[in-house]
Length: 406
Image (tube, rainbow, N blue to C red):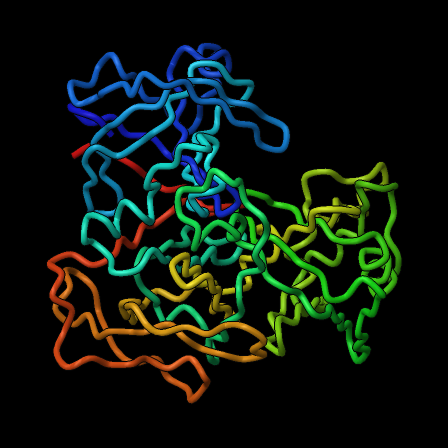
């Protein structure tokens, strides 16, 4: 970012909406703890301050700084006059690429086109949408694809569910979007399986609304649901809110947890929820990445790694399919505008898919399978010279996008 370019990394966050980068002067960075890198506005000739302060809070961190316009290069595309929040005071060193709804920006009542909308406005993608493929926890890379779907990264068919609306600020500049603030959907049931035993986890709390948040490693669910899952795997140790499970579950074929969204099951190995970093005194117990909570429910990276998820901000819809781990091939189709009627549907598919055969440096094709999510192939190819941005990212507990300057 900037001129000349300065490179740094960011955490991809579907749970927030602002692009936040730290300066070298923030306390953690000044102490040498900025592993993601920093941005120095004094060294960029394209930096333009918007003369507006910025402040936001995450779960355990805060950032204060200034809004500015800059030139951003990401995944082979370039955005000019892109709005960024340059953090000068923070208790954390992480840079964040928030890609949620505009009414969730920390600048309300003022909003600006964040990453997905800026790409749409620049004509790089037709729809403010992106696909998330976190890949396995032990893999070296995952990806985020703006404006498209990569059918090689999932199995079966994508099934679409509506984003659950909520009341946004009355100052929202776009009334049509004002009820859509968080990328949250309805979770209808959870089931577990271990060996020959399968259990449907029932609770008076189902269905529940869950936020799909790539900025969170952990899943936060109602206490009774967590208790039932613990029982299915022999009982949890520790105390709320931090439970533990046997470290032996962090092995292949140790069991699964299935999450049902309007009939679409996403199956997650129990090993994805076992963190080896914090073992008990005996060395036999590990941190369980599910935390009981009584209000906002979140499915974080420990769930998202097993799902291929398409977030369509324009259509207020999210499509999910079972992911395919560690696949090296791509089969990319462009997401285009299509009619949408989500109300009351159990299964419904409204994404339009256009053949992007002439797009730069991508391979295209038609997804296999006969599920309800099928491409609507247009006559000819996309007319955009550059479609989407497939960004390879560092592996681990989340996505990290690599940024540079134009």
